[in-house]
Length: 157
Image (cartoon, rainbow, N blue to C red; front, side, top):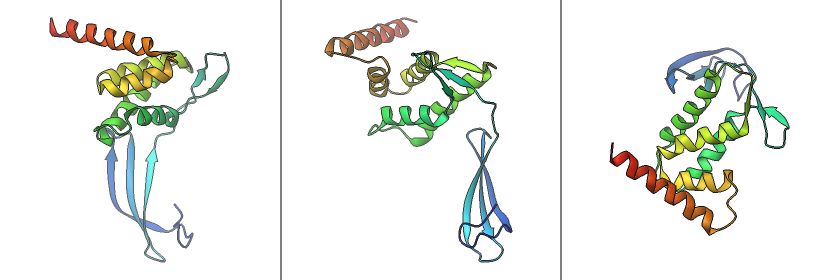
């Protein structure tokens, strides 16, 4: 690992910490030449998964695209970043656990909605409005009505 300051590759690890159930390792390092401290992250490289878009085009799966959508949906909500990251990690785990090298964008969107429904109603509606391309106020009323039905169903259990 090269030092961002002097570009030398000799450094020592000062501290290591596992994040997100061991999926990521955060390392604090110190350059042996200039003593600058810096942070690196280590993640297991995963096999490539192709996403089949609605128009039939294929693109490489991107955890960042899911994270951006989830973070945007949760923006300005009182949701800790750690919970949002757990949602993103959970979605990625479920996609990779399928063991398939292709998945439709529709399946990914449904998985995001499922995870957000357990996290925050407003974030769920925000994501659903973009994902399902709401065109008018009736679309919002319909999803809220369905959410209320779901809440009543879980109260009766």
